[in-house]
Length: 120
Image (cartoon, rainbow, N blue to C red; front, side, top):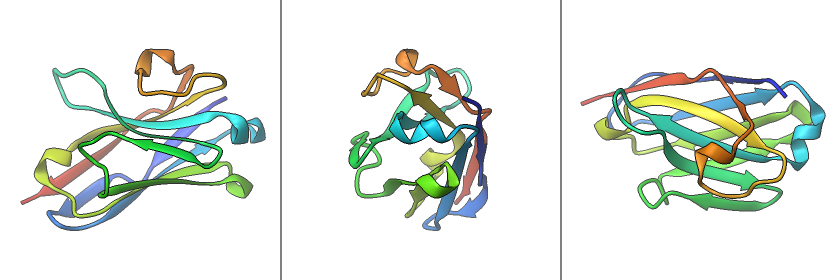
């Protein structure tokens, strides 16, 4: 499975942005899809996951971010709202056939990352 992330960019604080992650195979519909983020010099941080209709969010983004998917487009989304300067970083999508959880080391496939910059 190859993942292509997109949608990052520059947004003002309080604004919204939607990230997309498109998979190369339709079998991804049964995979756990996740979003993670990583700032320079820091560890990769869990953001959200989705498997079937089950979602799970990091406490830091709960109520602010929403993960969803469009199986017809082989795409998972991360809708981000009320963005803050501390949300500035590179966001990565990931996929796992069997694992369901927040441990980034358990994910088999990764997108290339998309940069989100929130200006204050």
